[in-house]
Length: 148
Image (cartoon, rainbow, N blue to C red; front, side, top):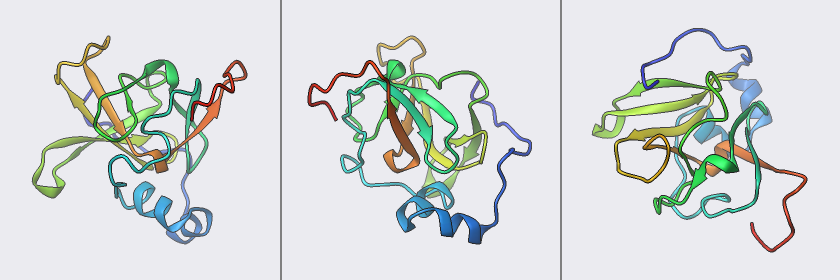
């Protein structure tokens, strides 16, 4: 699952089109593989039930059912919504050896995948995702109990 995936993606736009559609922060993270500071993103501590979509193309990538608190300052998931929703690239930037997670539909940067950290989850994987990369669509059964 953590092998590098290749191939073309269905949604392809020019750099100018992405710049027009995304905010400067979204563009920096989604298209330039940037990151937001920990504990500053909209969803790092959200408990609301729903589906997390790619902020660039709307593809459904993760659900609140797979979200867990990893205490890292970014939203963490132990698995994507289903196989083929994300793609993986080997990332050797910033002096690290990591697995980059991208949207399989539009190739936008989501974050990174870490394995073997000992979390008590079904996969022992942590998809560390930037809040600015996703948009939470609350489920209709989500209550208005004050959760973000």
